[in-house]
Length: 246
Image 1 (cartoon, rainbow, N blue to C red):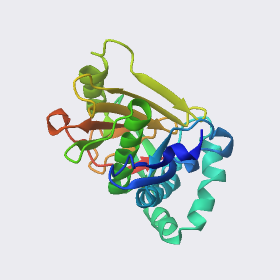
Image 2 (cartoon, helix red, strand yellow):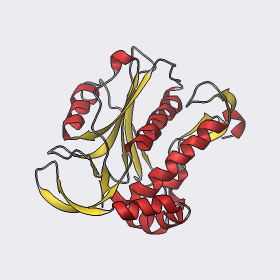
Image 3 (cartoon, helix red, strand yellow):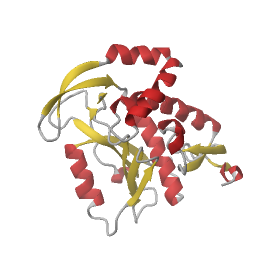
Image 4 (cartoon, helix red, strand yellow):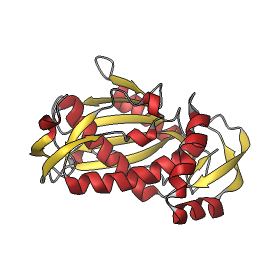
């Protein structure tokens, strides 16, 4: 696929500046080198590409601690140390914030777990950009200035809400993609009455166990949900992402 296709067209992230080249919707650094084929690519401007890269570096450094997919151990041992070597402040925050807690699983079972704290703001922003990229990659649709993007950690209650209100009523199965030996798995669809309307369920690293800093019976989430579209289509906001368990 020639790079000219991704130059001089609107950036899919800001929709204003002209793109300077392709950007991987899911960063290559999320995947082991042998799992980087056929990743979704979209046009991006220089500023958005650089900003998204910063968010991706943070996510790729903290998320592998909670990985549960086949390549989880290899990713954690081979990729993460190199990233943290280049980011001493982040390495210190992770080391100082790691601790043991008791987490209540969706089944009700309480189990001990090692916890790595994560910051919700950069993760929320990153997955909002990912949803914009997926909307263009699959449906060639750009969001408008007044459209909203809602990012949620789908705990038990929200997981059921997404399934019962968005995915179960679909007349046909949703778009489903698996990337990099199941390093990333996502489902999504575009609404029929509004091109900017879409709903996504995204699982990284086999389904990270994301624990809300607020705790509670439904504090565990393993999927990120994203809703795009006009304000009338927005779902309720999920709980903060407080940590990922190891």
